[in-house]
Length: 514
Image (cartoon, rainbow, N blue to C red; front, side, top):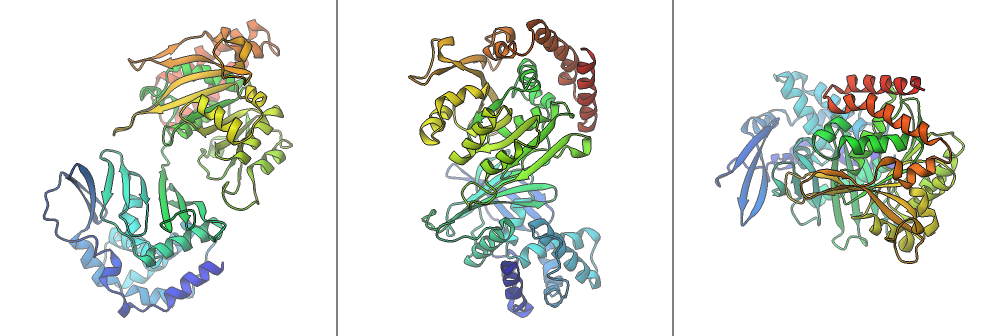
């Protein structure tokens, strides 16, 4: 709370006469743009212009003349806000709460001005950002085409990934005051303080139903003193039918994974950054029976909110792996062993401590899903064994590994490149040296971008392991029933609400079939 008070009392000493339009984006978002642009579109009262120079794409943000006029007319509202007794009244210490509270105050303060409802709402939000000294991030945050943006040094331009134009350099260079404000907000909303020992923080900001994952690195970890990555997690949920339509996976792969998840097998999704790991995990999670008790342990909440649809979900948020010792993933997993989960979803496995949490749950008989950064299962195994000091024998608990791939040109295509199962080395000739286990490739994606089944379900090692608990005829019959019931659902396009109802009904039919 000290950081909050420091922020607001510092701003309270500022008077409008000391402010100029320079504070409100003008020095970067010029009125004139003489160089020809290739494309443009508007975001509220901003115009986005795309240029290409020396083979590089430029994302240029420009204030509209209308916005300049509105700011000149209304910027005196800051005086009234600074004297408002409700300034420090917040229901919770969160980015969303701060923005909403400040926006309401500015909205109320502008009642004396002749403005349209749209103008008043837009200005109230922009002024809330300006009050927090991060107004020049506003267009980047609200542009739905911007997927992620970065800053490598306080003295360099922000650059971004655009869904159509790819990597673009912007005309935004932060001031020292803005850099310090961002540091303050990240500390405030994460609950952690930056210092010489803790110089990396990850937190979430929420705005307009979008979650922004903010990763911030400072000295001495970042030699430049400041490094920022802001990734958008859009509310749009991609379902398995959509992912099949996008050719991320096939219907056969979806049924294969759902079958083994339903029978308590573990699935690990590996791939490089932004290859669709979490998207696939959430899509599979949605298709599992709502009756299963799901427990999530994540440092950043990227899982779906399915409570309103009747799913059983218990979520626990732990501290980021690189800050503090409280709320560790391994500690929460130990507690969860006594909370009777059917499925445990650990989100992203990032550190040695996370890996130990994963294999501790697997050794205790709890199965579920998780993601891991690696370009291949072999790279994942090397990290687990040599970097995270995991006993190679424990890797046999992994069951199934889904390997994601992606293209490296825009628009990016994301897809499952292979599906493997982990089995003892004696089961196959291809194995890692002296490790005691091997990989069996069940599905692959060929040069024609088609998915090929290399091993029939009943011949997989994972299926054979299930035969120690169930009869072969029961398992085969279960798979056939699942395929018959779920294939029509996977093949058609429906609304999210209709799909949820279809999934729930489908699992009732599967259950009644036996």
